Length: 87
Ligand SMILES: [Zn+2]
Image (tube, rainbow, N blue to C red):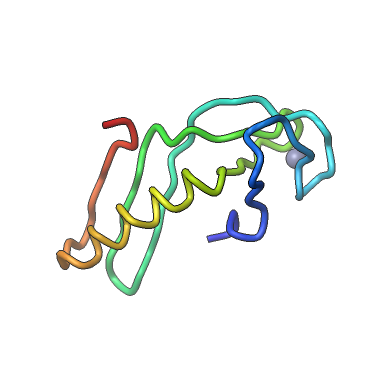
């Protein structure tokens, strides 16, 4: 889960923590979590995406939300769960 170290508390444009390019643009990404044999895929997650290296960053609020959903899916013992962020 590489984005944990790169989360910004701010919703505004930010500097990429991977290539230090200072241009990110808002978009949506697919986030994948794995735990043992279980995989949870969450689509359409709002994120800031680096214009240079395509690495993405989630806000604190979005991170909490996707973690909650992933943990919920893991808790149900689902082997593969595909969720959509937008309700
Ligand atoms: Zn970058």
